[in-house]
Length: 111
Image (cartoon, rainbow, N blue to C red):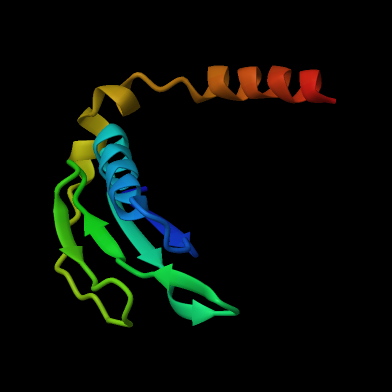
């Protein structure tokens, strides 16, 4: 996969925007994937959703950000670079068989 799509309904809290930005930049850089963060916006049942949808390149750079607290359509030109992810040390050295085995052990311990 070249893109990670994050659908969110994050309500407004002090400092939440900076936390999501740090999470998204870290995910993009760590997994060498474009991150498309789409957050709900508006007020429903007294809960305020702050919006601020954003797109990050596969090296963690902010490509575009939507307004906060108001609906907006965000349009960006996102370039796919298939070779970048394959060269990432985090991806290159992946061992999905080991991860799956360890997750199975953890799952059995929880039962």
